[in-house]
Image 1 (cartoon, rainbow, N blue to C red):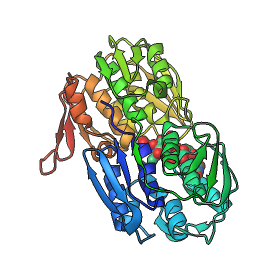
Image 2 (image 1 turned 90 degrees about the vertical axis):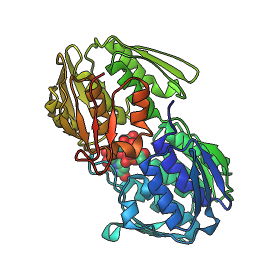
Image 3 (image 1 turned 180 degrees about the horizontal axis):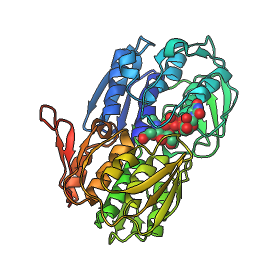
Image 4 (image 1 turned 180 degrees about the vertical axis):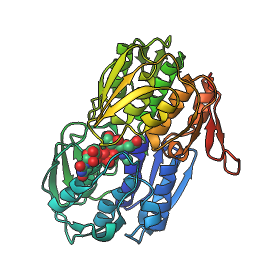
Length: 414
Ligand code: EPZ
C-alpha cells in the first residue's frame, strides 16, 4: 500500500497556517520530514495532533514568524514557511533550508516570485528575512520549472490582492495536490499541472478536510524493487497515470507492468534490457527515480546511458554501488552503466534519500548480506520501507541505536 506523498505533505502542512480555522489532513505519511514540520508548526504556536496518518492543525494559536535553524536546516521544504508566515504576519524570518546534497539548490527563483508580488525579501546571514505591508498580484516568470519556486509562488500569491500568473510552473503531482488543498480552503488556484498557474489572491481562507495524494516516488521505488527481485507484485493505493514515464522505461527493459484503478502489477524474470534515461520535470522521467532505476540498470544486459538534467551531483551513490560490483563511470551529468552478471553484498553508505533507496534495491538483488549505513536518510522519505519490503519477502532488518551496527540495515538477498 502506497503512503501519502512526502513532497505533497510538506507543502500542504505549512499552508494550513493560512486558514483562520483548523484543518484535518488525512493520508499524511509518518516520516521524519513530516515530524520536523510538526515541530516547526508547534514552535510557531499552532496546535497540532498527529495519529494514524491523520493530522489536525489549528492555526489560531500561531504567534511566531521565526522557526529555528535547528529545525529548518534539516530538510528542504522548511522554506515553504517563508511565504506562509509573510502572508499571515506580514513578515518572516526563516533560516535557509537543508535537504539532500545533490547540488547547490539555490532559491533565487523563490525570492524572485516573492519580490514580484511586493515582498521586501533577502537572505542576510543565511536567513530568509521578508516583510510586506501588502502583497499585490502580478506575473511571475520562472527561469526553470522549479518545484520549490512554484510552491512558494503559489503560497505567496494566495495572500496577494489581485491575480497572479506563475509562468513556466512545475507540473508535478504534488503541485496539483497543493492547489487542490488551497482551493479546498477557499482559494482560487487554476491551471496547476500546466505551465501557467493563475491565482486570484486575497481571499479569506478557512480550514479544510483534505487527503494527501499517494506518493509518486514511493510508488516508483516499489515498482523498481519488484522488478529487481524478479517478483510478481501488485502495488495498491497508487495513481498509475503518475507513473507513465517509469512504466514506459520498465516495459522497454522487458519488465511486465499493467494497471487497473489504483493497482499497479509488476512482474519480471530479472532479465533486463539496458536502456537510456534522461531526467526531466513532470511528466518526464523523475529525477527522484533516477537513482533507484540506475541500481536496476547495473545488472541489465548491455550498457545504459543515464543523463541527469535536473541536479548537478546526483550520481554519488554509484561509488557505493561499485563496492557491490557495479560497472559505471560518470562524465559530468551523465552516467554510463554497463550491466554485470551479479552484485555482491557489501558495506555501503547512503548519501541522500533516493541514494539510500537505490542501495536497498541493489542489496535486494545482491548475493549475500549488504549493510547500509545512513538509513536515517531513507527514514526521511519512505514510510515503513523495511516493513513493506519484508511483506514482499525481503529479508531486511533496520538495526536500531545501541547496536554495534547502529543505524545499519542488513539486507541478505532473497
Ligand atoms: C523538489 O526539490 C523535491 N523536494 C525534490 O525531491 C525533487 O528532486 C525536485 O523537486 C525535482 O522534482 C521537495 O519537493 C521537498 P527544484 P526542489 O526547485 O524544489 C534549480 C526527494 O528526493 N533551481 O525543482 O529543490 C535547482 O538547483 C527530493 O524527495 C535553481 O537554479 O527542486 C535544481 O538544479 C530530492 N533556482 C533544479 O532547479 C531555484 O530557485 C530543480 O530544482 C530553484 C531551483
